[in-house]
Amino acid sequence: MKRKLFGTDGIRGEANVFPMLPELALQVGRAIGYLFKNHTFSKVIIGKDTRLSGYVFEASLVAGLCSMGVSTWLVGPLPTPAIAFLTKDMRADAGIMISASHNPYYDNGIKIFDKEGFKLSDELEEKIESLIFDENFQNIRQYKGDLGRAFRIKDAIGRYAVHLKSSIPTYINFEGLKVVIDCANGAAYQVAPQTLEELGAEVISLGCSPNGLNINENCGALFPQRLREKVLESKAHLGIALDGDGDRIVMVDEKGALVDGDELLALFGVELKNRNQLFQNTVVGTVMSNLALENFLLQKNINFIRTPVGDRYVVSKLKEIGGILGGETSGHIIFLDKTTTGDGLLTALKVMALIKEKEKPLSELVHLFDKYPQIIKNVKVKYKKPVEEIEGLLEKMTLANKKLKGKGRIVVRPSGTEPKYRVMVEGEDETLIREIAEELSQYIAQKLN
Image 1 (spheres, one colour):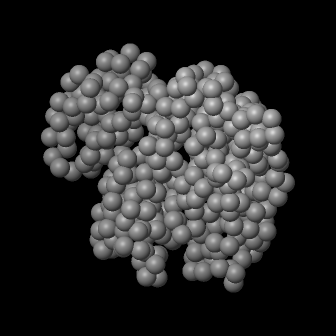
Image 2 (cartoon, helix red, strand yellow):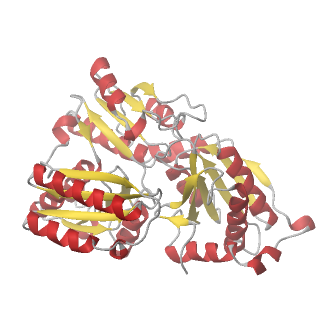
Image 3 (spheres, one colour):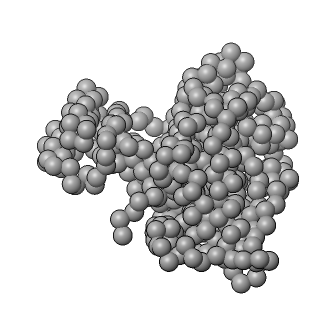
């Protein structure tokens, strides 16, 4: 079956444009209710970020689920990892997060978790799609007293905050640490400053005034410049930038230098190995992880495995091998003993705990390797098709790889969430990789526009 709805990370698109239509969200709710309903009392947790259209899709999903006899527990704006945690913690049958992550406010999306808090497999997503487009399924529903109910959960923020604080040893507090946090006017705007303050930090908040239209707007993980300026201006010990749904993080050290996901994986990979807690002696990254990270870990006798882009693929590989640590350059960091998905705030707490334990500034903990120059270009297209079906592209990539002479990598992939291709070229010669990235980008644009 050719997939019509789900991308790399759930369903995503512009609100009120296919596939993000309220009538389709209602059918998604019905399909989830059908697949996850048990024989006694069924419930599904629903959370969202701060987008204006969140009200539309929340109501649609509630209608669909209740029509199938499933009760819904609404928690309001909370990060994606909070919904994953609460789904398992509150013994729900499934969890749904309404968010388009780092996308602009006019987009929205639907992410689905199973009862253990893990994102759905491709197979389950395909089952949901097949039900939505099955005419016979439209006649399946509940009646009279068998309809579901909707409840609002008032203590969800507190539950998640307690979970976050439990990840830090009780003998550690953050007194004496000044931290700037930018919540991207998104889902973490309440819980992130609250949790940091409860642990004793002096907190300066940015991006904590959502109005439905300003999520990710020149703030958060995609735009860390304001955070960097505030860290330097206030002489803070570190800065934290989250994205709109709080599942990824970019950091700034006390000198204003950016710290991305690759640097955090290096930090925690070595730290866990030194503590004999790096299960399977392996870190899992993606095809976009910098080659220098892989080489650094290998020098430390730590194995490195790559997966396709998407934190659910990282999680899947960790589960498969029995690993504990993985993530993406973009800042999705997974500690599989504490969370089932990327969690920006949890990662920040663990970094701050290391600063306190080792009594070292962040700049001395990270920057453990010199990255290979890496150029990433986003190519807007009218339509997408598999890379191997773009006429002549594989041949061009083969020729480009020969120019790199084994000292670099090329990754071309369609975005799972937008009408774009990502072209990544990495190597020692920055001028050469820039030329290759530009050439491949122009070729793709020419073929698909």
